[in-house]
Image (cartoon, rainbow, N blue to C red; front, side, top):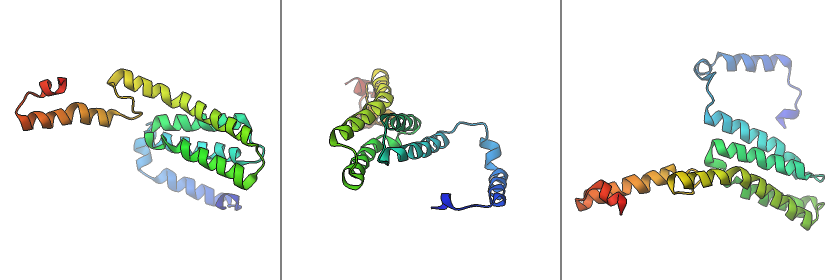
Length: 168
């Protein structure tokens, strides 16, 4: 509701000045940080996804929302399973609140969202599997744990060579 309020121009200039005076901006101004890119992607996704929750939802809007969510997910893995929540909300809103889209069209739109999002995320998982043998989206932590620390603990406990345990 705050976005609809008529904010004075001076207040916007004050907010910009306060943001500009933050000293950390001088340090990070030329860096693409993953959290900033992720936040931008998620805000863009939510703004684009709002169109998907209207009576006149278009396939183009659904595909763009899934594409933007996929791009945001590629910057940070925290939104990896958000597509499930979005589809559940999409189905709930259209079936029980708006009651305007047919079940068949709703199924096609959900499939389109899933396929578009999958086209963004699955290639990265395939790449991870090819490189590390682990198909997790952000599997480096699990790979490092299973391929390094667990064999190290086993080698220390059993008095064996670390490389020998890693090979087993």
